[in-house]
Length: 151
Image (cartoon, rainbow, N blue to C red; front, side):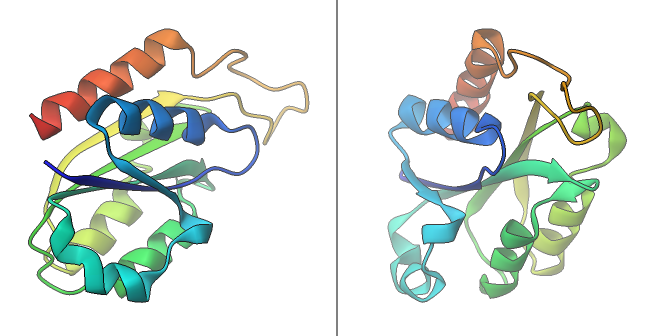
């Protein structure tokens, strides 16, 4: 299954580590959201079977650049899509994926899975929380998650 993973990673590289681990596991094409060309994507969309979208969590949701990308996706995007994030607290139990899920669902895009792990975070405490995160166990969880989705 040919997979494209688009991610945004700003402060500490947490999401980039997860995105790279996922991409290496399933031999996915990996693109930073800043380098993503939506026009070229629309022309190449048929080349991919599965898409991953991820970022850190900022003010309770995925980064705006990821949310804005979804606006450019065609309606009734008939491909497999998964979402992922890193955050200072458990994003899934706090509903921090809801904005991205709602944006995808409003375009008729079904989400096949979602993944989150803790990441080093200095948003509220200058010395940071979750030192050393994501760690090797988190990266292994990310590898297992994406492998299960794309098998």
